[in-house]
Image (cartoon, rainbow, N blue to C red):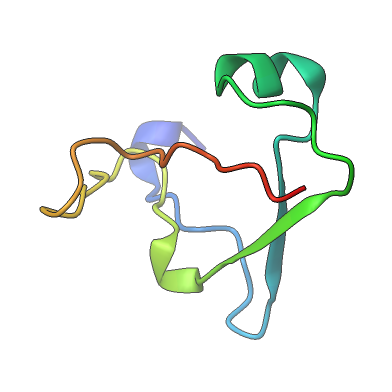
Length: 74
């Protein structure tokens, strides 16, 4: 089936919990200008924050960027 004939959706179940790990590798700590955390930085994502392939990503008006500068939690 050609990709152009299907509509891709967000690949998750409505009963899923999404737990993410922030600054989880050295290069990313450098990219964010933060020290490597001593403990994992965990955060959650809500299902309504996910976007299917090819769909627009909306930035909140109150923010100039999509990625917040991480703060050290150590």
